[in-house]
Length: 328
Image (cartoon, rainbow, N blue to C red; front, side, top):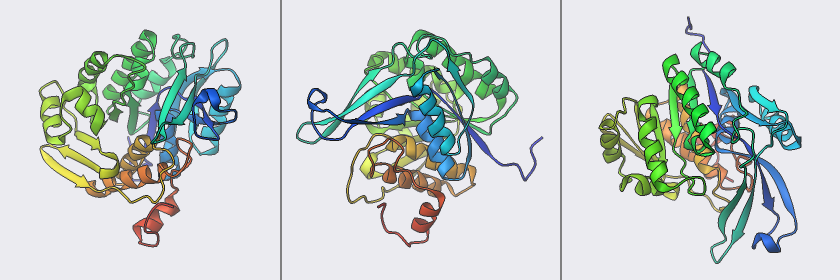
């Protein structure tokens, strides 16, 4: 039985990758130098939580290769527990490349993960399911990406999702649509299938329009309630416009934090998730938890690596106390 002194914990579950980030703008065919970073929505969120002082575990399967070792090293250095990250012999760790090109220097990504450990079904979820069933964590966070890597990955995804829900943990899901992984109709089907298992449904405004023809949080909650959603609420991330949530028909909106120079927006949504979850676990007022999510998301866009810009707890405290007006 958990006591009043219980330290609240989180487990994020999904596939990490190593991203190769170019040192210059332009098409990849014309770029010669890259820097490797650890990336992936769920590991990003885990690191964001750890930087905010939340005890966080990360669960996954990676290849027993140099990139898999890089993932473990990066997570450990950030204070994330990696007891449930499996190094799998004969499997690969997925990689992808970023490209900044065009008139607006838009970010494009190119994935090379079809032979990864989780994609080919080499990830043994048994130990994780056991700990989930035992209620090892207060909050479990996943994204729709894992379900779309491959059919074996989708089977594993639903096994752990169901175990998390049955454990009594709070479960959050960021749908995180990636059309390079699956068609829009497949994403719509997935969104409906996960609703009975989640307490919080996160979505971006653009993907909400793609999936549900609305980004209105109140309408989304009504749609979800009609499709089996019995959770707490819906959170819509609106980028430079902030975030809005609907809980039991009550809408709460918070503005974004001003950022002087945007380097790369990838990882901002994962950072928002970390901030919001941290705020909820620290029993902050709901509006403040949303605001913390927006703050972490704002810090994220100031750096090239997915999570490199995420703030630490002292940095957050400085903003909260008015000692720093805007992220970096």
